[in-house]
Image (cartoon, rainbow, N blue to C red):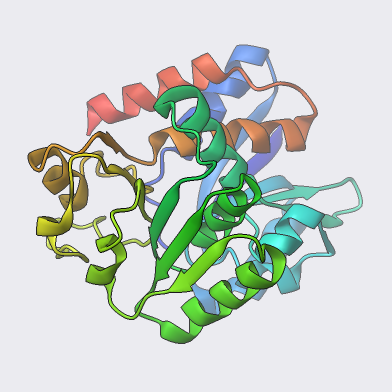
Length: 280
């Protein structure tokens, strides 16, 4: 039996195992997907142990998407441009190659389900971590008009803005000093790419009074399904309200193809995710 898994800290909230195990079963593949909680302090040793244990591929989540890069043999051009990895393929010789399917999964969900064409639009992003890097890079590649970005870690945010400006000089990309300033220019899309909202006690990162009716709000968190931000966006009558389940589905399907070189059964994977939601 082949083994695949998710590495992160924490991972117990993840729906990835249900999604991928349903796909393996549907296609008759003798494989199992597991969750592995690896602390940042022990990432190198514990990741190496998983390789020795014969894992064939991984997904990577918070907080390891950037740190994992130095532990890999190679990364593809997309992951190199983004500066973060969310998918790892391991070959027969235990050689590793990193990929990033987050941004592509996000754009695919935007186009096919949300019905949002980012070209020429103004985007506001909360966060500058691994997933923010993937999403902002793909948005810039899709010729958005501008990106406003904020992170409480100002140096991290400055680094991302600098890299985006260097690679996409035709796009208006700006660092914002305060989270509440993200919505001053009435962007078309607000993205939460931080973990804020995963816990009930989390406070809103922005003033809900600035949420406007033409705004689409996309929170990349999917568990819980309705974060405080999405709840406020609904209350304010925003034009669209989406959590991260769609991005999870499409990035997972892309990762599945990287590992096995077969098309993922997307409908089966989506059904497994919906079942997980009903259990919560």
